[in-house]
Length: 272
Ligand SMILES: [Zn+2]
Image (tube, rainbow, N blue to C red; front, side, top):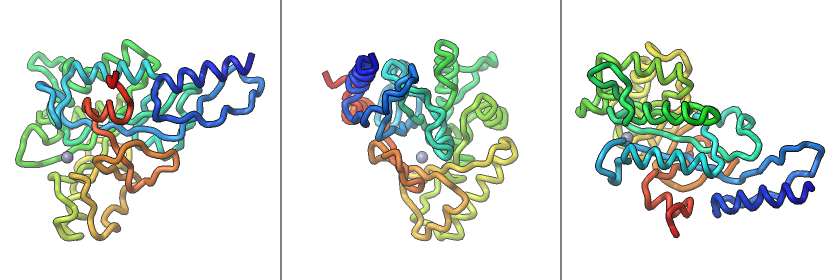
């Protein structure tokens, strides 16, 4: 009986994603649940949500289909900061995935002129998906910018609603992370300037979000020469790199860009 359950679990695992290797099955104890172990986990990276599809933009349709694919393949979303507590919140039989969004563009979180949440924005899509599948928690990490020369990138592009959006994302269960105050390349400015950029961003976010900001996406994946600049953060993401081992490096969390080519490469999705 237990053998059948383990075999079934392994079949599902291998069928879902060939790159996740099955760990040895746990001892067949009395439990009716067989916890599927995983050895690697993905952190997905989105930029703009809108049309057309492109290198830095995912359409609303494709984003919805990404969520459906992840759900159908037994993934379970975490905020990046949840990694600090380990993987204990991932239900038996599920595999963790972290959805991240860089650059706080309007398409990630938009209110329409009539005041309704834009169902085509990432926040609208995530909320609708959670309503459809209540066992898919409302989790994602948004790496935001405060003030750049591109107004649509400044705290989701609707200045009068910026504070409300940050509070709502947090209240709904999602995470606000830092991406520097003005998309500053940390390898190109002095350590003092880099600290100022990050401190200024943290001070702005603290006005709206009570949760401590622990996660940082370094713009363009570029690290400062002086790593003490990053001391206020516990998790720092790269822009590429593939899957992370369960014993990941917290200062170099690899990501996978959620575009068709990377879905094929890292998940064999749509590869035929
Ligand atoms: Zn960016």
